[in-house]
Length: 229
Image 1 (cartoon, rainbow, N blue to C red):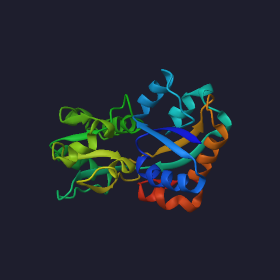
Image 2: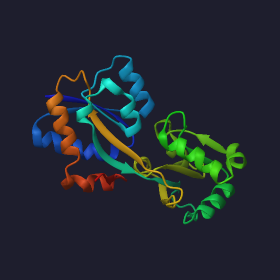
Image 3: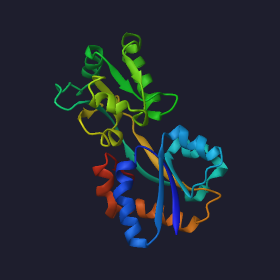
Image 4: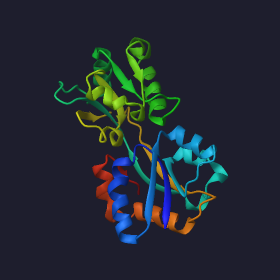
């Protein structure tokens, strides 16, 4: 049996090994489709079919009756980290004031477009709260990982990136300088649900249970996530 899974990009590093393990354990096959979280909703709204959808909790809830409410399952959460090119000087990210100084001193900054990604919404507010939104505006690139945001850091085209750790893990040539300090941190929590028009709802629900089994926590941790309680 094939299960069609549509997912935002952040869980990709976890789903690849988990998918292989699932297929070997069950004999079912997974058709994995990854895209930006806003694009996933557009694609499903235009008629593309899935059996289960993995998205940040707020976007999942906004899909309403397109999903089976009782099937909603919290999967894991990923924090925002500061990323630089591998080999670059490691910036100080230990305190809010250190973050402020690091971003003001950087020649360029990248993070996800707030119109597309939840982390971008948080970071836009963070820059305003730090009082540096106007100062860094001209040197800021709004680019999701799907559009090559983290890759710009790897290529040296952007000095400092602010992305989910799970997104940073997908790109070679970069170094995670650290997480945003607790006072500035925001987690993106991913959840999954079975679609209302799934042709394999029982198998899709079982797949969500497979993903949240505590014995598989190591896959999520390796991908930059914390398994949800």
